[in-house]
Image 1 (cartoon, helix red, strand yellow):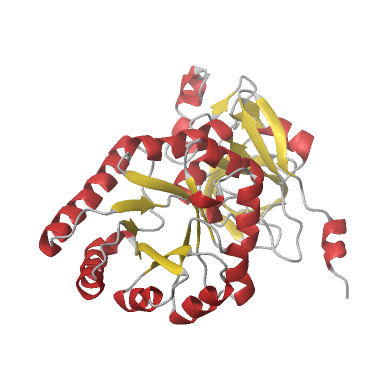
Image 2 (spheres, rainbow, N blue to C red):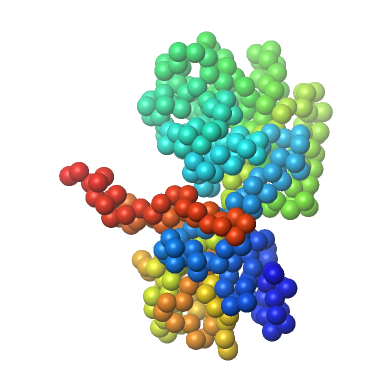
Length: 377
């Protein structure tokens, strides 16, 4: 029974409690008014694994990853791991036939540990050190953003490395390095025409036609209409640019990240205090502000009112949440979108995977002992 199929008295409240454009498709309300994701009541997640917690809907994640691959068959889809990455997520990515984009050696290690073929990994990053470049060399593609990285990377290689750059000038420098192989260009989604002009310039200057264009992270939703619109926009830009430059159509690589994860995640936290229109919970503000908060442990009773929801550090989780007027400490709130993983002086919440009415721990909660173990001063 989905929320919209619940008892008649809840139908009017559905738009206020759950926005179907934000929450996972599997979000439901049981007869006790508890929010359920993946068939699991969030109260059971909080009772078993503690709160705050990040709940990840496996079926939803897989569906959205698969949708990109199916709806964009002429594009190569690579999951942007910075959105959320664990060994289990990496395994899903590999099983759904996607590549993986990583930003640092830690993400690379997790991806490989999860079963992603290194040849299907793209490594990028800002201000990378020699150690960073050495650690990520050997993957399928490395995105190089400056001349310094070209020289540093070439000095660390024992075998040829495929690379992507973002300009004809950097391409010329790569072509002078015998251990580097220029695979294509990297650009933003809105810069396809400029990138094709650069690829044509590289062809004219160096007599080489690059076969690949990586347009980075795309933020389209996974709906058929949005993905069709994205695909048509790419095709239009390619048609115009390739015709103008008389350049063959390259393979286009897209890197959805939050477009896959945002609808698959719900964070939950318990109410600690309610005072003067301000609700404080024991969680933290999500990095992607979805602005949708709901009571997870019961039917809303009586009237509602707008409140500001704050995290335990006083940060704003939602500035204008419509919640029951009788909200009280101990209630469980759910926030559509990911939970903050914390910083160096907080313990990070667990990641709990739900599917088909079952929940299991995917990433355990960080403890005070974990923090102290790293502090060796």
